[in-house]
Length: 132
Image (cartoon, rainbow, N blue to C red; front, side, top):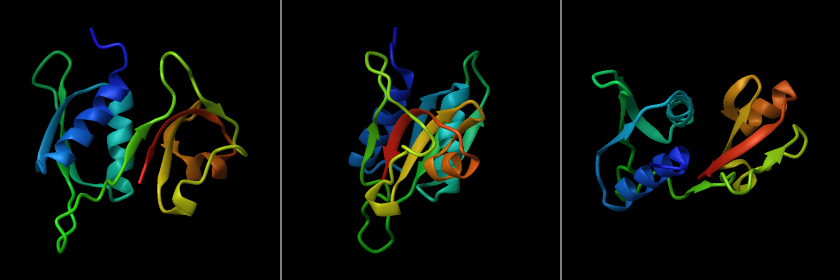
C-alpha cells in the first residue's frame, strides 16, 4: 500500500523526466487530477488525458522538453508537506519560488491552486509541492 500517493505522483514525473520519457502513466485521484491541471495551465507539461478504463482510472501526462537543448521543462519538483510532517501556510506566508519563476501548489478550502492564486483569494492551506 502506498502511504503518500502525491509523493508517488511527483516521483513518477521526476523519474520519467530523468529517463527522457515522452509520456508517463499515473494512477488517478482527484487531488492528482487537480495538480495535473495546474501543471498544464502553468506550462510545465505538454498535455494530459484522464482515462477511466479501470476502477481507479489513470492519468496520462505528456512531458514537455526544451526544443533546442532537449532538457525537461520541469527542473525540480519537490514534495513539501508529508504525511509525517504537514506544512501549512497562511495567505501571507505562502512562499515565492525562485523569485516568482516557480510555483507552489497549495491545497486550500477553495480547492487545489497555485500559491499566487491562493494569495489573490486570501486563503491559506497545506503546501503540497514546489515546481520549477
